Amino acid sequence: EPGGAPDPPSASVPARAENRESPSTSGVAAYETYAVAAGDNLWAIAARHLETAMARKPTRAEITNYWRSVVASNQSNLRSGDPNLIFPGELLSIPPVR
Image 1 (tube, rainbow, N blue to C red):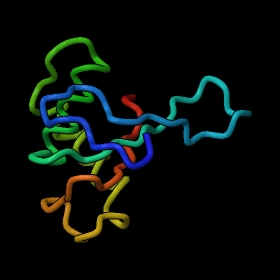
Image 2 (tube, rainbow, N blue to C red):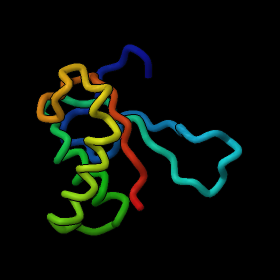
Image 3 (spheres, helix red, strand yellow):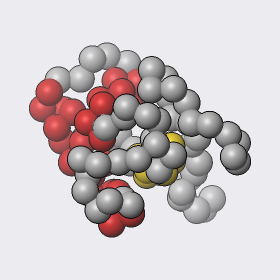
């Protein structure tokens, strides 16, 4: 919702999801857009998203691999340029879990 406050940090689902693939690419998993909430960090976002997608608690190695893809998808778009410094309201591209 435009102008709305981001979900609280305890929310386990992205604040907003949208399909970034063209309509002609059926069967291809889409990226989601996530609005950073206060207290978020890329590791926690990756872990929550992965746990939801896998319907189980991911291992540290699985989170590490997915976290790397989240960082790579957002590195050039981060306001700070630093994946360890993200800001509430900043929009992230969350890659599909493969």
